[in-house]
Length: 149
Length: 90
Figure 1 (tube, rainbow over the protein chains, first blue to last red):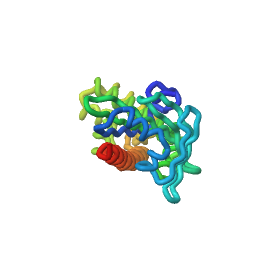
Figure 2: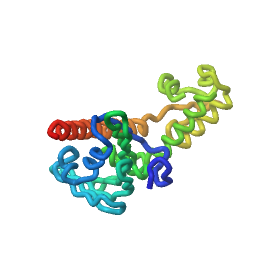
Figure 3: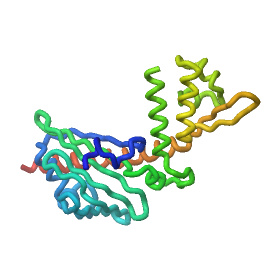
Figure 4: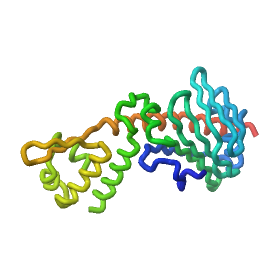
């Protein structure tokens, strides 16, 4: 599953995209993203990862625990998985590595896999019902029209 | 449009159209889309429908985005440091 053309990702869901530039090759970045020992150097003190599509991932930091499934493994380029805390909504996380002159750009995207999930993820009460994914989709729709008008 | 709604408290479609460079029909269409998305509420006062922004869903989204962005900023900074450390060792 690729995030950008995936039908499983709600278009109206909130979307976080961050990036960092490093002076290391994509190969080295890839290792840091997909080797569980290397992940423990920066992601969380305890990481278990089977870096194959369908493999499991578990990330623990004290009482905070998330687990999920590896979705995409494209060596040196793209690594994606889903994760969630127990009883909370699931997010989709995707890393993209881009080779640059003398280094790499690492981009990460996180977005809820279904809109209702984010009410819990946001730590708010799910009283609004149905999640706000559809609402944001409506807002985006409205804003798009407003922009061209 | 959301900005205008956020400024104005309760507004009518005609009131909004007067403040925006779009027709009243276009405003009504947008308001219906926003109502469908439960981002605005509508109430009839006399012959006019008054619209009001319901900010809660946006607050939830903004909160989630803020929280998750901060988490990834921290993690990416830790990743960058981990890579630099290794690089200086080799």
